Image (cartoon, rainbow, N blue to C red; front, side, top):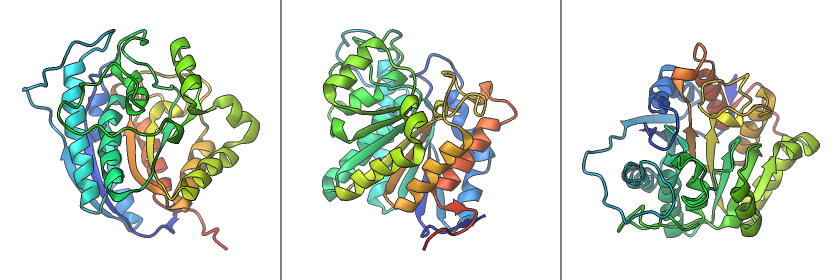
Length: 313
């Protein structure tokens, strides 16, 4: 297979966060992706790959105001979010593309905030493509579990309840109309109301079945391009059908197929609009002979230019 994407300067950032999830094991995700050969595959495609290692959360956690509702491990998530945001922002400031290896999806509170800070400085509109089985649009007051990996999309759009998460660090929000939830098939009742009220674009599996992945992802790509924007991709393992990728603590049947997922990545690659990436929720403890980790590496390779043949005119 060959890459037809221009070489990029990529920085791998390990974010071994599992405090936002209800099942332990996601902290091993970055190591599993490295063991599955992610850096080597990207280098073979012609990219310059820097591995910045894993971030480490210190013992001096932030002191936060009380949170109304339920948010488990909120001080640790606040610490992780501040750390990840600073690292992601630094990678972008150095002219590189951050690939954040998770870790549960709560890490996106940090990674997307770091990207949003950078975009605010450069004047580029930021769009976020959320490839996930879940909407992740709960707040502490709506969450049935208090698990913070179900809250990052709402937090990033400015929903209340976690306003002290970044302390004195800048919190730059994304426009709710620039958030695209893709592959959704599990939404809590309160989330559904919030999504409708805020006008969030939700591509659920019914729409994918009716119209196909190519039509729907091209619609998003066209919108980002028309706005002169940049796209952050947040890829959750449970976007995929669990028969393909069982290594996740929140499996939901009926997910994206192998070809649907690769097609999405190939079209995103061809767009040239992706400026940052999260790979989240990989739980090697729940995987089967590294199937999920190997598939994720293949998908990231497709996102960064791996094609069987050149289909350009």
